[in-house]
Image (tube, rainbow, N blue to C red; front, side):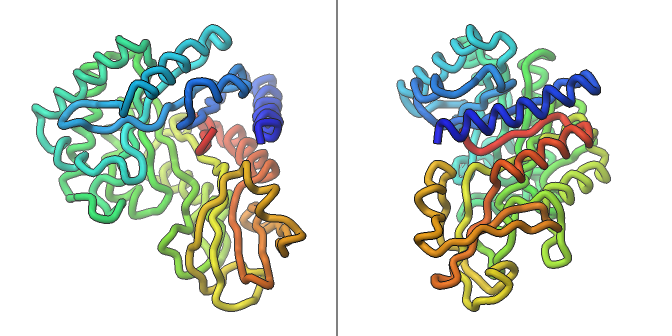
Length: 344
């Protein structure tokens, strides 16, 4: 798996270097990281621009990391700047299931101020370069049981303003945005927040989710007549909402979503289904094998790969080196801010 990631990052970096020679632009290469303080040493961090450590959470109205292991990992990540002086280390707040009190806490000015102050204190202690807000989701339904309210949208704007005021101009601020239209429409006041942040990380994965009743590509580059949600559809919609292209980051998935189909047709694609489980890329070579009945397919419309097991009626959607190369080229051609992936 580590050999694969090194090869993949080399592929992406090579594509980016070629583009930079053409237009002299820097493309952000952003890795979300949840591992320990030693695993990261095996990866070519020289080819990354950002590592976002995931996740911090709220403890009352303050930012908090879980334990001493998290502290050691953050210290180790910051020390990687000795290998790559241009590397930015950020920390992400929340994640799926990790923002249960965000709606309540960020609804009050006093608590937003306390939160921003504790972020600044943490950053000064660890020498961290930025924060990524991964609140899933302001104002719309997200993790089951978590509070969401219409006023979240305005409170998110106030939170961004408070963070920028407290942290200053040089600290980076980004936030994650769901790739579906209702999440882009309802969660954020784009006109007010985009001048204050460095980028928005478009989660152009999980576009076919665990609640899906029809199989499809969970991280396609382009839309198809059967599936509108895609990376390109999300980017174009953000642009129509006034988001600058050079502040949009698209996402790649280092995991598969596996669905159990009700019937066998069309090699499993766009069929009645239910979500079963996820598979990390490091386990692809042992999970999706010919011996186990899986066959590889490529969708030229969506520009996305998939696997299908006819005997088990098992459909798998994912990114691979081909689709990620195409996403990276898309990012360069569209002059986007960069590409991120979940997870290193």
